Image (cartoon, rainbow, N blue to C red; front, side):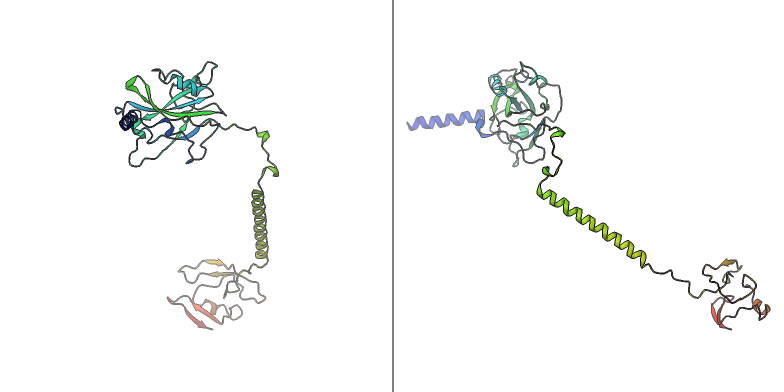
Length: 304
């Protein structure tokens, strides 16, 4: 009896080394690593990394395929998987579109080497339908929008053995794709908003109103309390003057001129010639308490 038990265990290990892991060891799952993992016509699944690691296959001869099926498609595939024409029995473009369609298609994912356990490899994401409306039998095409009850499984096919399925996973649970809603069914009133969203909107509106009110108050206050323009200190009360610090003086208008009742001189411009003020006579001379002698290199204050 003990001998039979040992023989049975060795036989099981031998079968496992040839066929790999059992089909119940892995089930395709929707990835939670990305947003939009289920859309109206695509699904993001986790790849079967490490699942086919124990399968013995010549390098570059075994490829991993994804099978997508709806309704009776899963049963049809299980019936047809031993056929050497499994890759073309139910091509993608017409897999679900005709009454006679088998309701499944195979999508090529890559060679077995890409899914081996190397350096702690982890399952990656695979978006079913990333090729759009493709035309080749095993392309990664999209589903019809809002398709329901879609199942998936991974299979390993050996091209050396006339495309024979040598290992496979379990079928996933049925997955329903998203269906677009009519815009008339959308509730755009307060009833379609959550209480937290309404509270946040009210708070932001009040804060915006207060900010605008403070801005208006600041503008009004600034306009009423604006400082007076500073006058030019020490400016002569004459309309025009000569630029005495330059070699050839040019008459300039005094922007700080203020009217004065006293008549300083009959001339609009003070002379730029040394001693010219003395020749004008006392009735036309401008009486200055202090002035600068601009004819010297250094500006020296003088008293008259």
